[in-house]
Each structure stands twice: as structure tokens, then as C-alpha cells.
Length: 384
Ligand code: HEC
Image (tube, rainbow, N blue to C red; front, side, top):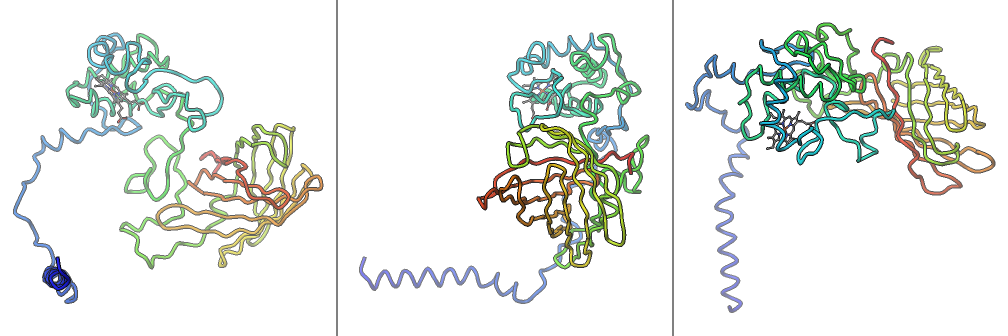
């Protein structure tokens, strides 16, 4: 191909592209897109039966459970015929998800120990959800093919196999919500916005009202210029928290688990104290923090005195976005532990009104920061 011909081809391509792009560009330039028509003239209103067939969700409190009943013995026969091929003869062999098994080890270390299996007995917080899930999703090739009595029977059987109910238990709409699942206390309600309350802001029946998140529920998508409210320290922190920290070997002591409580109290205008009493691998210790909160500046300072023989000052900035939760980043001044220079950084993520997580890093002798564990603090709703 000679040079002129190549240049000509290139020009033609360019002209053609402009022809395609031009109409789009000009309609954009004229401003508003044309509004959509009121209807597209397709589809029809769903019938009451069609809605009922899909409106099968069951609440954690049992709301929406259908009439019917089933025994564990009936469930065993249905399981053998319709579930065992994928979940194993005793619910433990697979090839698909293991359904049966309890863990007696303390803690809830699914993220740290890949050998732990998430089963109905070890992980599910509500028996009512097992019903909902099996009815809507199992067996995968024919979801919806089990009748309500069969689902009750399968749930009774799986709960009995997990040693949560007696082998002769009968499950129905009254019995199922009363079953206490072993992992129930391992979960906290997600109260950001109004997700765990209904549209009237009421907590589900039978539960004490839960604290609300501080992010407002705008009832619409957030926009760029929406303001994040200033963090309300009193509403969030005041009260008693408990924590667990799996600490690696480091300047503050041996590796191992530290556990204890932290109590936040107000000592003046925007002034607070946090007192931590804990037991760790080297014995008991206390940490006293005097905290000042500069609300408008979105900063915190804290003076920390640790009974393990050191103290330091930290300043922190509070960030947050309307999509979720606040974060506080603390950096410490250098301090001495047994003659060596140490610095700590704490990234506190306030993931719910009842829980925060603190990613901690440490630097020794002016070296690089390394991971020093991610302890959890949590608060019981009753302590509010
Ligand atoms: C064809 C294979 C197959 C059959 C048959 C089958 N399942 Fe499943 N089951 C699966 C798979 C795959 C998953 C995981 C689905 C996922 O994670 O999305 C699953 C997940 C589950 C879970 C959730 C497990 C967990 O802890 O996350 C339960 C409970 C369950 N099945 C119960 C049943 C019951 C009861 C039956 C019989 C009515 C049944 N399954 C039949 C393949 C099967």
C-alpha cells in the first residue's frame, strides 16, 4: 500500500467516525435527554397467585412461616432421597456444602482457620432461615418442588443431626422460631440506616430496640454535596465494651490472646476517659486514656497510660462517608519500651453501633510498620 492511499484510507475512517459520533454529541449538547414514555406498552400486572408464589420470605422471627409440620424421622427419608447425593449420607461428606457439625473450640475463628466448616450447627444464627433457604433454593435443579410439610421435616432432621433439637422433635410455625441456634450470639444486627427495623423504625417484635447508626437515612441515593454529620462521640462510645485481641509477638509482650473490657465515661465538655482492664499472655494490665474530641475539626487526641510500663500521645482524624460508617486513624508519638523506640498506629473502623475493629500496626527502632493484630470491641445492646 503506498503512502497516499494509506493517508486517504485514514481520512475516510475519521470522517465515518465523526458521522457516528456527531448525532450523539449534539443531543448531549442540547442538554436534557428526552424523558421516558409513561409506559412501554409491554407486560401486565402480576396476579395475586403469581405474587403469592414468590412472596415466600420468612423473617428471622418466623414471620411468614406457612402452616404445616414435619418430624425429623420424615425428614431423614426425604433427605436420603433428595439431598444425600450432594450433601453426603450423614450431611458431612459432600461433595457440596457440609450441613452437619458443631465446633466446641472457643472463639469463632472461621476467618483464621480454613479447616473449620460453616455448617447449620456452627454458623447459622436462625433456624427460620434454614427453612427459608431450603424452601426457596434446594434441591438446586428443582427449587420450589418441596411442599411445606417436607421442608419442615427436612429442617427438623437437619437440626436434630446437628444436636440442636431432640431426635423426635416436630417442627412447625410455632416451634421453629423458638429454636436457639448455637451461633446466635455470634452475630450482631446491622443497624446502619434502618436495615434491621421495619419502615416505621420499630425493632422486630420481641427484641429490645437497637441503637441507630449515625449516618442518616436519606430515603434516596446520596449525592456528592450531601454532608456527613459530625461524629457523635457520646452516642457511640459511652458505656461498656468488651474486646478480644490475638496479639502477635511484639514490643508490648508475648504472642497470645488479650481479653477484657473498656469503659468510656464523659469527664467534661468534649472530654472523656476510657479505662481498659484486661488479661493477656503476660498477666493483667490496665490502659487509661484521656480523650479530647474536637468535634468541628473532626480530630481526637488521647493520652494513653499503660500499666505495662509505657505511655504515649496520639492524634486521630475522623473520616466517614454517607454510604456506611466512620473511621478514626490514630498515630502515636514515639515512646520508649524497655529503652527501645516504639510507634503505634490504630485504624478504628466503627462498623456498627455495637462493634468496632482496630487494625493495629507497630514500628520498632524507627523500622517499618508491621501488622500487630486486629482486635474487635463489641457492646451488648442491653448495656445501652
Ligand atoms: C445437585 C446437588 C444438590 C442437591 C441435590 C441438594 N443440594 Fe443443597 N446445596 C448444593 C449446593 C451447590 C449448595 C451451595 C449453594 C451456594 O452456596 O450458593 C447447597 C447449599 C445448601 C444449604 C446451605 C449450606 C450452607 O451452610 O451455606 C443447605 C441448608 C442445603 N443445601 C440443603 C439441602 C437440602 C435439604 C437438600 C435436599 C432437599 C439439598 N440441599 C439438595 C447442592 C445440592
